[in-house]
Length: 506
Image 1 (cartoon, rainbow, N blue to C red):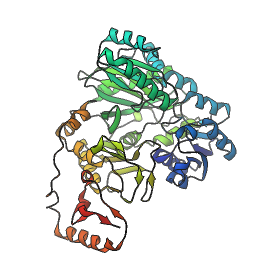
Image 2: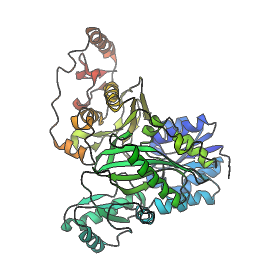
Image 3: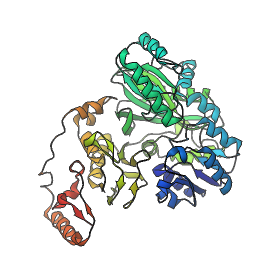
Image 4: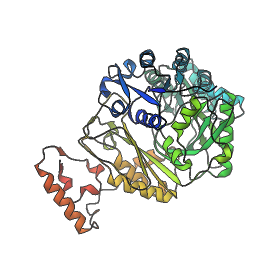
């Protein structure tokens, strides 16, 4: 059934809220932002047509308050809500509440979310669809005793996972029976804090697999297309760090088999809108169902780059009841895209979050570079939320060229006042194993266990003299300013030339 969407409330924050606002504006749709006290001056608040306070900074008092969000929708006349990712994006009760309030939820129906958004129920659906999956429990674990029984049946190592979430939250790897009790308690507690449900399940830990996911888009008319795959094997503690499209090891046959299996699963559950089916893949090209994310993914930009499609536009059109404007035969992949998740964290100090004031920001640009970002010079990065600052994407005809383009962009990137993981990305992208695509889900942990190469003091000796002179002149001209920014040694880029290692006066 066709329906009109004239005003969208974005029930999220940061770069994804800004991404949705821009898509709506391109389609002539008005937007409403919501914010917590920590985000009063955020870019998504400034860019939306209207903006309304939800409450204090803690997500439980603001972005997770579905009742407050629906009240803002009622007051503003918003006829649709886009949940972004995280927060309420995979909350079936919220999707159902939207429907009862007469507000279009830009995502799957609550019924499909209950089947596929829950990791345990999704495993049951995968079994019913005849999809291979990782051995383990298909329902939530009642207690530690049940976890011990399941683990004994499939053998160690095993992995505990939150049934209601993702993003590495509520996950614990266990190699010995004596450690399972403490891991169960910790995983359940983290899942409860992150997703409002402490339910966890257990599966066999497959060692050294690749993590590959299939992007889906389905409409209300029974059509579902898969938009290629993303390689997400570079992870730290089960949190994706770098994503690529397409995967360097997935050929046409494996892509077709995984895509068709993912689409069958979605159609069997009456799925509508954007979704992602995640798999583990071994060296023999066997794939195992892992879970389904019933929302737009953080890493959707790499799929957009290689398909030429705007996934948020498609989400909005599908939510209006329109049929998909393309068939499977229309999907063509071209080139290669890589995404780096830029975080406010300190890799040199156990990846501790690094909130605080951004005192200097020089963002990369140029051919093939896209950045989804919602921070600015003078923004105070809050401690209350995920520390992701931006998503930097490089696109080029080949994987090798995309890697080199990303390295160039990282060299241009300057974020002063806080620590970031930019230096870590340089290390990864210059690593021989990464460049040769010899990666799996344990790759980054192994790399981090190795000693990092010492910084080369002569790294910029080949910089032309006129560039050095210009940098020195800029440094001298800025010496009259007061604010001092001293980037961490691990974050140095080509801007460190000509005395900038001593601090840049702005």
